[in-house]
Image (cartoon, rainbow, N blue to C red; front, side, top):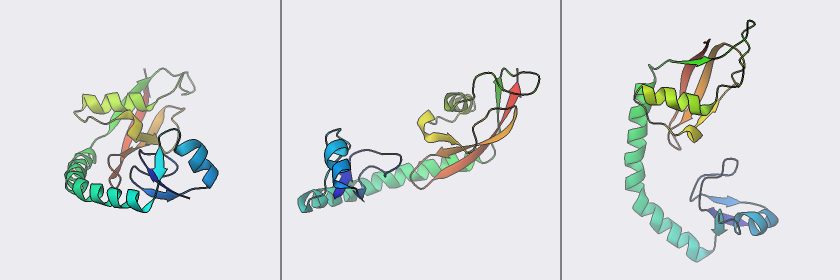
Length: 147
């Protein structure tokens, strides 16, 4: 069954992608929740027209994301966290902390676009992945220090 996605779904695809899913998943979850619609020939034509109109706008957004990515290559963040004597962190370093640290440096990045390669559990150096655009991804190193 082919579905046109109405919004980004992390494990399935981006908005306006045409994806093939099992009929039950499409009929019972994606369509009723408003995450997608059936990919009928008329819906595909409408989608193609909308994509043509949005291409120029997307190109500008991509260029802006590439500009931010270029400026982010030199950035190194330092995140303070309470830690024990062994270096184990009390609580967790999360994406909100990374987004706040980036905002303090002048970069406005949505916390939902930030992921970790390895979850920060100890004091040390880690890498955060920033998905600025569908095609623009940046790795930002950060250090967790004990407060």
